Length: 369
Image (cartoon, rainbow, N blue to C red; front, side):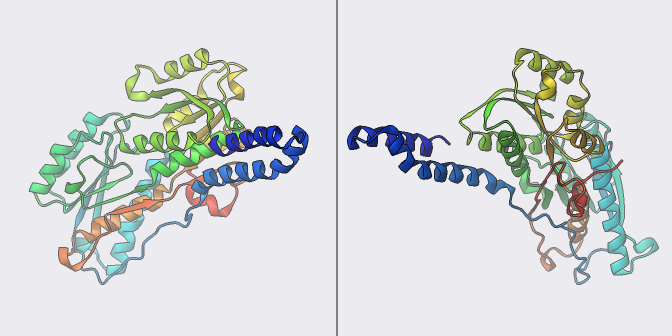
């Protein structure tokens, strides 16, 4: 980030020495170049803001010969919380829309089951649920992986039994055994958070990242996107990155960071659970001034944004994600050569702050209990 400005400063010194002009006279000539350099750097960071904010609700194409009576089994990495409720709602509405469009009723109707642990970090329970679901031999399996490397055996079992797999929300390592992925552009989540937090603290200072479990692909992408973009601000230092699956007590670990860095300027929390945990912590007066950027506009975060305790959050469209997932799942029941299913569909996130909370265009990104 500093290179253009450093070059201009160097030019100022050189021209002062060579021209015999005063430093003030040279600076008056150079100043427009400095402004241009700063504007160029800022525009580079702002580029991550651009994105399609329209809800991605696909049109049901009845020319696709999907199989009547198909059962779609969904195993989510969690069933608790506003985000997952909206994912499930999108899925339920997609099932209803498909049945209505195709005229499927009773035994011909497409059905869906939705299961998963309450805790996103309870990977063992999720794997056990996937095992049980595969044993029931559904037409399609949809999963959101709490651990991107943990379900290899389950993916292979599904493949051996002819069960196509759609992954949503958070991807897996072995993508060859997956027909399609439907989720947020999580690298973009991190980039947008870095831009907003970096701008809020004046492009200089110390930042900490408080994150959900590192073994989840969506989290990895968010942290990497954040780190890649925060590097544009040469005077910002990320002093700590704490993952919830690497500590015994996440709240205690976050408190320790706040005490270790009493002049901390900003915090990025990578998901709703961690953001809400941070908001609920007892913090010192000094910590109250720390700029916070979270992820997912839950009811609690909307309240915090209105109060000013959170400057804003990067939010997803869980309803659209759920809807997309079910339509992709339904498409897999059609004869394979008769339909082309797009492998990856990434839904753009949006920035939510006090100025956009009441904007009708933000409604798809706001969660309700």
